[in-house]
Figure 1 (cartoon, one colour):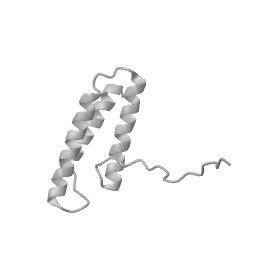
Figure 2 (tube, rainbow, N blue to C red; figure 1 turned 60 degrees about the horizontal axis):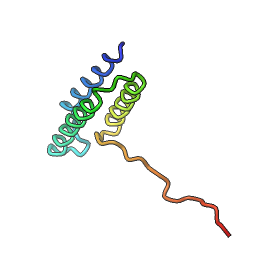
Figure 3 (cartoon, helix red, strand yellow; figure 1 turned 30 degrees about the vertical axis):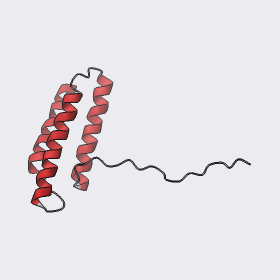
Figure 4 (cartoon, rainbow, N blue to C red; figure 1 turned 180 degrees about the vertical axis):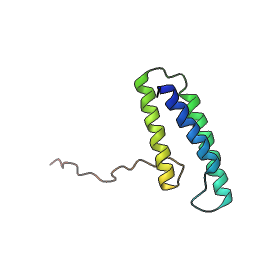
Length: 95
């Protein structure tokens, strides 16, 4: 499958997901809000990255998109997962 076909396939998967998405909260208002978020975020990111021609960079964005799609389906949460960072450190003490 060519890179262009992979990108279009991901976009179609995201659009289909946005129409069949059901919120984990079971609230119709939350469901509609999450569906709208999926559609708008997908469109925004695809438009933002449409001028990228470097194959490696396109593959990186494609991988990120597939990962976000898989995480959204698995955790039933369309929003990106926050990156956790260590809140403590074991620094060396200067004497």
